[in-house]
Picture 1 (spheres, rainbow, N blue to C red):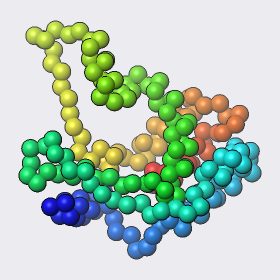
Picture 2: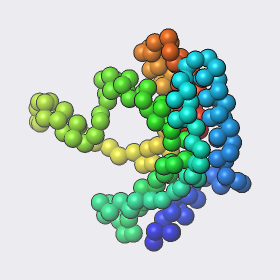
Picture 3: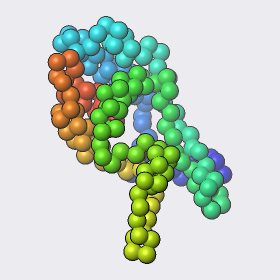
Length: 180
């Protein structure tokens, strides 16, 4: 069942494509180019540059977590692509360092289920006239339009970052590589 669900998900050509070879060397080359650009322009310290270069990167790998809370037999799988130890892991952490404080300022930011429950406790509404509705997005991350996501990131960075050290455009270049 597990293998069948993995094959079903990976067979969706809208979300996944078979690669002819391991893209890790190409990704490392792009990261090295960006890190060199960052150090030459004094946007990165030597310590940050060393952090961003993964010396022995692992290949990303795919697995699923069965959604046992669903009432389907067999349960559908939640696809996960693990980047732990990959060439993109340090770069993603670095971008996250810049984006997290900005994202938390967005009025619609929801951290997790506990945060949502706390917010709901503080809201009063007339149950006879109002209705609380939730929704679930199938394959949320694979359905997010990458270019629109990068545009939102760009706007967020431009509106909130001081260019004195690391310019927003550089962080956006790193985010673009991490997403694509």
